[in-house]
Length: 84
Image (cartoon, rainbow, N blue to C red; front, side, top):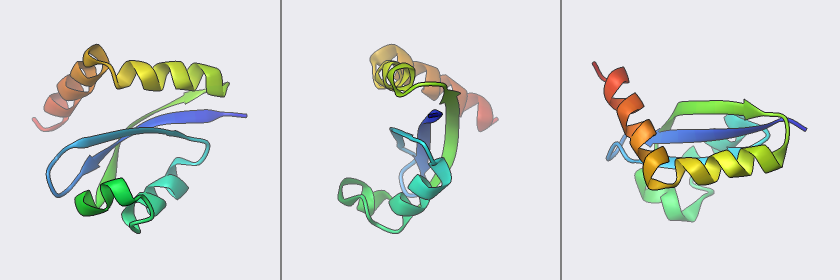
């Protein structure tokens, strides 16, 4: 089963949320409808980045990477490039 690692950007404060799902569009709708209580105050979100993987094991490793300091730096640099 294919799996995606994604990063959402908050329209409220510009912060990023990193997650994993087999259906990114469905997951984005869940976030924006307030179904994720920890992020409810940061909605709405827009899809900022996603990458597809063949297995959940690969996706989980990449999600962990993006949540690390180096991975967050990668996303920050990507965000800065997109804003120019």
